[in-house]
Length: 221
Image 1 (cartoon, rainbow, N blue to C red):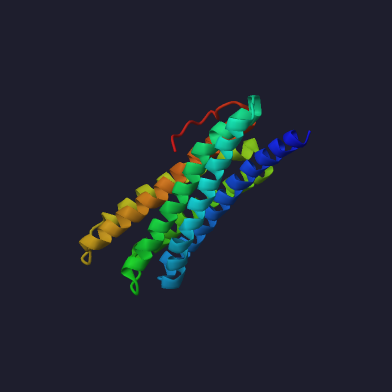
Image 2: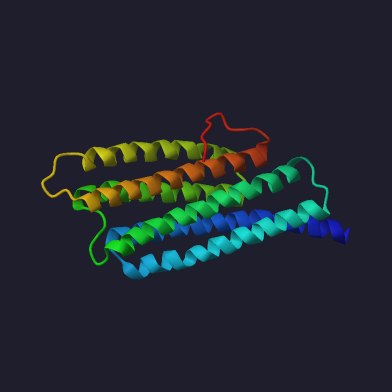
């Protein structure tokens, strides 16, 4: 009986680690977006340093999953949780990496702002969408809400629209266009877009864990 109690505690810990990773990724994006908008060096450095926390949580998740698989005989929903937790954890860690890349862009151009004035609103909205997607993941994991997880792809559509708008503005005629600015913005757009893609991939795995089905809207993370 005590052995099975530890088993269920371990499964709860898997959910807890997924929650921790999602919250760390969400917080990283919120802080990175603020560092980018405000050219805040201290905040950018904090995001970069805290990325190690995501790495540590993912390693802990992997070790726990492998231990449970090696010592127990999980079936059905428990097996879905354990097998899907590994790629979900990898996706959440990657989201943190992408937020750190955004923070590094802010640090690289400090004390200047890495985003030109005409693009600041669009890039800020991309940050808001990314943080919102991560926030939905946090809630879906905490409450084990499959329907909320299934809504995440719609936010990715919003990100794609903002990404297209960003390029429309970036490619508009301008007398003060600089090559480094174009490179910075292209990379920032890509980081935000990939963050959203990873969020969709994680959401699909959470939905599968909870329902044993794949959501109708299929996106690769």
